[in-house]
Image (cartoon, rainbow, N blue to C red):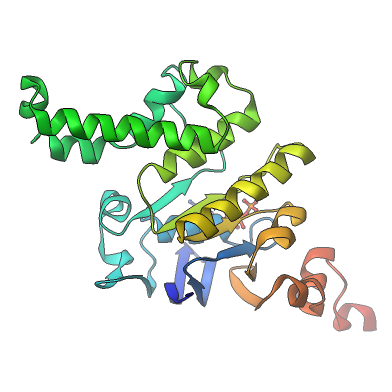
Length: 270
Ligand SMILES: Nc1ncnc2c1ncn2[C@@H]1O[C@H](COP(=O)(O)OP(=O)(O)OP(=O)(O)O)[C@@H](O)[C@H]1O
């Protein structure tokens, strides 16, 4: 069943006099893919940075609905947003540990769980059973996600040596290893060729359908947005100008105007 997972209420983020996000409200459901689209500079990444704790919005509320109650994201420190609120993220510019192996990148992502099991490393150092079990689970989970993103054969390669499209998939696997309830993806299709974009669509719909989490997606590639989104929110100059299903958004005059930069009536009258 789809229920409200993320609620964004009247969020405003200003940089000096510039309203990067301006009185923005919408919600994203669990078990669904919500795309945030809009022209360059519309405020999409700033919104992600507010959700993931990199920025604190000056106004507004960001609520993540867990089974056992709501979590107010803007009140948490950024590291707690991943750990306690269970919000995962990938970045516009890939941020892997390039000199670590593909598998190691996924183990490091689970460092919180391993640290807990090691009682802050003493048990780990002593090789206690609890730590050994947690370590095995971490490796199993890493291998599960490597298989999902078709990188199991490259587990021992340096992450930095992978082709670009594979690094993008590895970033998604790394985020999934943290067991997020909400996965925020910042332009996951950037730089992918059409075949890789199609594979990405399959991966993301699989995550939605098999793992039952919510995905929030910033994306310029309309084949991805229109192909896999359940709901689309459109921003322009920090404000929401439309939201709806992909079909509704494709035909929305305000959206077409924002993207094509059509002259408004005032300009036409001159
Ligand atoms: N740290 C900052 N300081 C000042 N202005 C900023 C900062 N971050 C973003 N902005 C401005 O806020 C506005 C929104 O930027 P943002 O990066 O959120 O847009 P975007 O929709 O993600 O754009 P793109 O599609 O190009 O990535 C832009 O005008 C940008 O220049």
